[in-house]
Image (cartoon, rainbow, N blue to C red; front, side):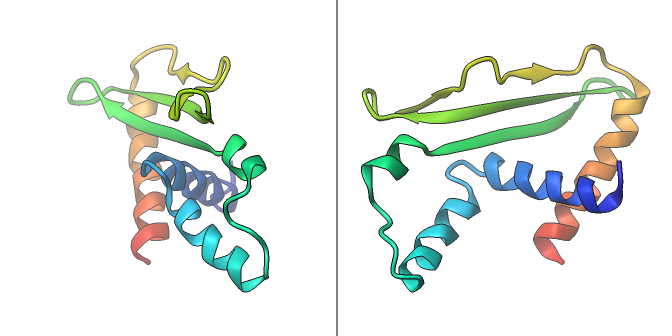
Length: 112
């Protein structure tokens, strides 16, 4: 995976993993500047976010987990979106190494 693609995926993962996500905080301002509405029923019905992370399991092995959530207007809660839950097949050293690459990209995208 190229560094550019990994950086883009990491940024998307981070934006989703921060609860409401930074993207949802920035989008209303951008929409207002463009003269677009920010509070339509269609937008509320299509709110989605994701969570992605690596987790160290032992001193040299890790796994990963990801999920997509969508807003359910009927319950006013975020719910798991379909079959979007994913996890590593096993703990391993490769995931442990990848965890550091992922976090380095995340921190670079976040803090510069």
